[in-house]
Length: 488
Image (spheres, rainbow, N blue to C red):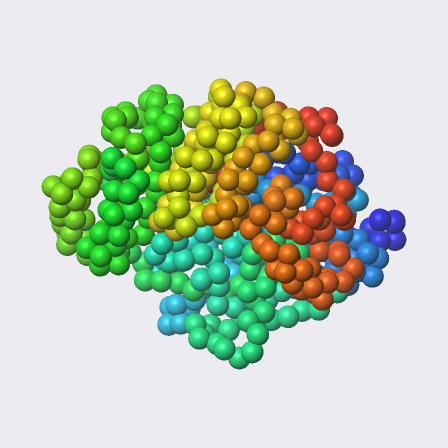
């Protein structure tokens, strides 16, 4: 970019909200995985939709790549700017503008942190259901851009199911806005759904109207031990009926994952259950009648134990105990830290195919690396599996071999290489495992129509042609002195 271009950007956002060169902080050039790093020539922090529009008109005219940077909790390189491009942060556009208790909606700026939005809703006695490990750093725009899911999908759906209206800026600076609060709106093309999950490649989301729900007043949580995957799915279906639609989470952990993390956390809390079972599940309900909900929850589990479908169960009796049960699934850093460097995956497959896929994927990795550690866990109620593979070292050849084992095994099942974390840079080469050539051609047509100059987050999702990203090793090793926590 030229000095004139820099000066124009500074005029748009104000000199204090535009940095170049060494003044650009780490969070604007790498994400939490630290696998990719880049050297953007500037970071701009607009404070209004008009400023975002002006920035995009300027960037479009000069052909300068623009990448929106959110909380940088992604793991696929999707929010790492292009070398020589512009990082655009909406952190100043972070207001919860309205909580409408009649329409049950929240209007919020894209730069708002998810946890802040959750807390504002709860202060008003309502509930924003989306929840994930990165709640304290992920932004509303980021979770819209990736169509995030999290651990309550089986009851309330993905981010796509919670977005009623959007305001966005297109590649040429055009503002498009439909901030309606209606649940039903079939007036022509639902263009907002093109932007949800597009990872900033089709437009820049600036505001959203989110659907809220009545605030549950209690939660019931249990860790259960299961003798087989088949029993786990039977338990899932039975509980969904007996708990009258209150089941909000059903998280599966294979035995080796459970052992690793429960043992790694012994300094903080005792192991909640012996390591005797092939499969463990975290089960949670959220309801509005504490005494009746607790009785229904316990009665449903006791019945399943008596029938032999649940081998063992621990029910959290207090908020602290419930948080302790969740810690085995969510506090991943103590267990995963000794396995660095590792490759992490986020795939989905039909629930019926899940046990066969896990066995075959594990075997495929071990065939290439007999001493590898391969762990599976995830939001099994919606078919989303997380996998972690560690062989004690990592380079591009090892990464490719692990990718080939995980994604190559997935392909015959018709699964997705990304369930909720997005495609970004990391998974772009494997997108063809989940999308046909016809689908990819349609995606390119949409991209060309909305961003003909390719200035919006180039190289992400559909390939690397316009991207100048490097791995962290290419720019002198991982940036920063400490590795970030694992968030999945």
